[in-house]
Image (cartoon, rainbow, N blue to C red; front, side, top):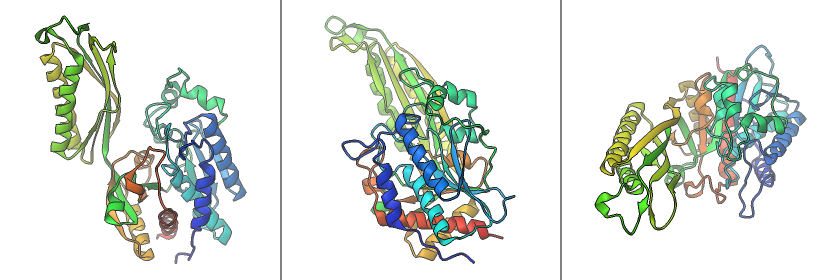
Length: 410
């Protein structure tokens, strides 16, 4: 029998607003880059809050923070909740943060009621989910899951040449424990949807069944610079013209396959108004919920870049940067989230996550699922990112119910 516990949405909201002041921006968002001083400050706040509840805070060599509340049976692995506290350079108050603070509200509710779970309950703040300062993203959970090594993580550099390892040491959050040494029975992650579907359909909860596959590439088209006024069109090796043709075709490929393609960064060189660009460098992000379809999209995108480059007598490179296959979530965990929405009478629908999350990596090593709540206009990675107190509260209540259901399962 599950306990009849209710989270305090006002207390959760107050925590969201309090932490938003750490790295707060004039436009009402947050700039809290991974392993910055602002990140250190919010980590210190998180540690204090968890220790005040009687939790033991473990920190591993990747900087991941895991607060553990004891259960009746301390031989069992913890049931975990979590997300991240780092943000984009112009981030909002909810992306990732809701998952950590929603989990903290669950811990506070259990503590206030004096409720003792059978298993220990854990709350995780993962290091560098965003990938905004150090790329790739979700690196803390990736090291935890054994996808990246600690040495790889430490070696990644920011734009100023500071390594991730140096930054981790500088803020004092490289712990002694080996990532993954504290295993989880299961992992539940609460998050804003970061898309418009729930809001448009009037749904309160997204029951997340998995995360779509994601492939990132760094690309270049290499033509030849020449004078804009004296080089006839037929004699040009215009890298930007080749890029434009490839980009147009890549958009069509994504539409044809029902997937997503994004060219987020483009730089043309040498960058003079009267010189034909001889070099264009760009990023390519391709996503689909089916790996086979994503593979076809990538193959066709490579062909599009090659053919456009050939037409303009240019060379090209396409280098993989990140490769995350589609990740289905655990049916038992999904069922517990679904049952929680039914118990609470909340409008809910199944949904696939379009964004990557730490749950993508935890799902490789333990049963995992996610809970989405709506965000205004589906806007995220933006200072104007917004969610309601009621929706955040409903999401945290579903999180509590799912965790308790997993704790008492047979």
